[in-house]
Length: 367
Image (cartoon, rainbow, N blue to C red; front, top):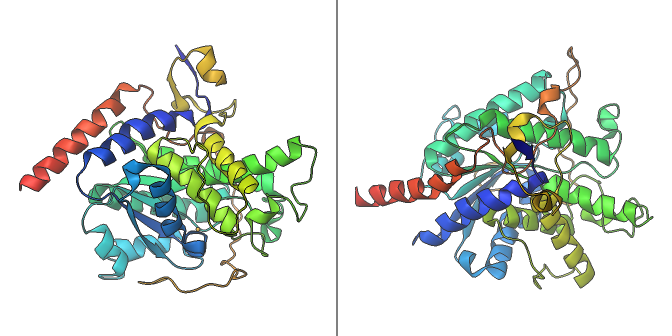
């Protein structure tokens, strides 16, 4: 008998068992690779994440990160850089080089929310599969970095994305589908639910009887002036969510935050990241593959080349509109989901991953 996941909570098991145990067992420095666009290189997200991880946990003091990002870049472009189509590129050198601990994949900000029968989404999903295969060949774990809905929706796709909440819902479904389509009995793909952390900030403001679109609100200030790219605060929220997904650890009153973020905002951001990774509830229509063995009731309640170019805060990401197709709605089976969830319903498999990983790395060191 199975019971629905307590939201994204399974990452607390998979992340803790897989990421933390493996990282602390290795003598070599854990290395991360961020592949994306201006959502990723804005505010040096990868370096912010490294600093936060080192401040938050002694287990991650030596972590390093690299990035490959170009404004407006899509998965299809990254795949051509990585698979040899464009020759021996910087990204291909990285992905064929020494093993990373984890590789973060972030798509252009609109495409994951398009209907899943749409050609643009299908191209994206196929490219994600190709990138995931290369990441697997590198020996790294694949993380799909779920981005956030635009602050007031997307005026270029107003019917599909009329406001933040609707856009976020479609992005959630799209990223979950990327991950579940590539998850197998032998290897899971994890979703980093940054977009759900943005949504938690939004929802908390609504619950307090206030307007998230008030220019003084924390939610408003997660974005720069274009209402799309993250501010320093928004990138900090993303880094906090990455920490939880990578380590399986909650941020517990971490005092560090980038200069300019006040204590109240810092605490609210950390709480939103914890909620998104560990406590979000799966939609009632979540498919069966997002289940794991029964829990107690208490448990169930409890986005450039070899070097990124500089970008101003108001740089506009390449806009994309979905091509009309029929049917126009996503596959209902793609609704819902959770970070770290996968097609395997049992937990025992994950207990074998660290041992297999360590055994493989020891063999490689002996060769």
